[in-house]
Image (cartoon, rainbow, N blue to C red; front, top):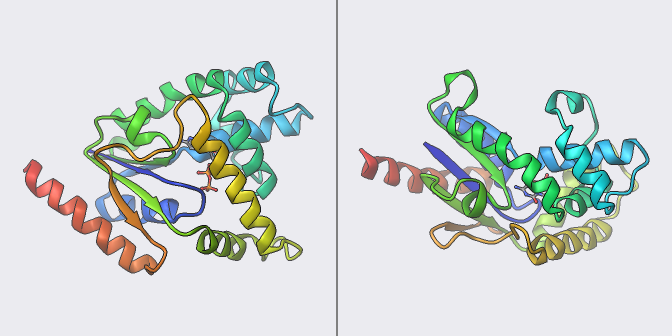
Length: 214
Ligand code: CDP
């Protein structure tokens, strides 16, 4: 069983992925962590994320354990992540790990939940259930601001809004694995939904598919 959740930044897919994986006892992979991790490594070595060779090299040598204590959730790492993510060498280097996680989830879990931008389209085109999670850019910027403001009180919501729009545009326009809804994805707009309501809506879809699968 593989559940794919794709969608733009701060749409709520990460929270949903965690709730779904806990509820069904599935393993969860936040694939954005991999791109953020590669970006963090490049920035940490004073490299340029838009340098194709440097970014692809960092992705090939990437080990998830190395970023365990790194602060990869910052706005700066997010922006650099979307730059390295447009690099085909980087995407190719990270693909195998994601597919292996989906096919053989850790600790013998009976299924996997992966969230990102290209899970339903490229990483797991045969996923059991696919969601494309969206929300208005204003709501997404507000949610991300709430997440970050405690550690960075200087951050302005308007800057985060601008940053998300830039990142969305870059993620949707790139040639390799652009962010897009798979043709068979269930669209879930969380703009006016509480976390509980979004989770309930996702569960209805998943339970329906599971019943159908027997
Ligand atoms: O958490 P947030 O939605 O802000 O972003 P993320 O999921 O951590 O992803 C950071 C960046 O990694 C995105 O802006 C994408 O450029 C890239 N990414 C990707 O290209 N493909 C994925 N499957 C996941 C992330």
